Amino acid sequence: MKEQDQDRFLRVKTEGIREWQHQSAHYNRYEATPYIALKALFDDYACNSNDKFVDFGSGKGRFPFYIHHHFHVSVTGVEMSGQLYQEAMENLIKYLERAKHSRASIQFERILAQEYEVDYRENRFYFFNPFSIQIFQKVISNIILSVESHPRSVDIILYYPTSDYIQFLELNTAFELLKEVKVPELYDQNSNERFMIFRYE
Image 1 (cartoon, rainbow, N blue to C red):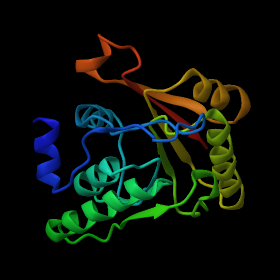
Image 2: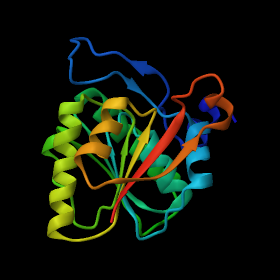
Image 3: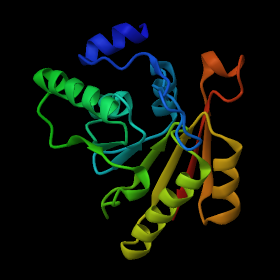
């Protein structure tokens, strides 16, 4: 199924790439995770209805809509761009018109990632290279503080992982690599087409 068809199935519009008008060293362009990659991830990585996800740099909301629909898990998209946040909210209205009633929530917040207050129930955190290593470090620090206050196992899921993110987690935190998931159709052409999942027990 093509990207466009998957979007249509979920009643959302998440395609395209968005470059920032005023380039910043701290924020990367918008680009949604390919549906083919999301399928590869969740074919190999289990989640359950008690999990609560946060997608940092959620853009138009593809990752939140996908996991909410397929796995009925609660998810929050965190996005600093007003324009992308607005498009995510428009998508949410369309998505909820046909979404099956679920106890799992789906919501979006317009806020800087480093200012997002991690809820003590949130335990799965998704990143597709949304911002610089400096911001990533602050976000991870906030997650760790939350875990120290409310002990629980948490996962960091990196798609198309950068060496900066990986080195920081491996050398400066207690997170340990749980698994690597390669995207079969894409990895042969580009070894960055993979997920790395780190766990903090």
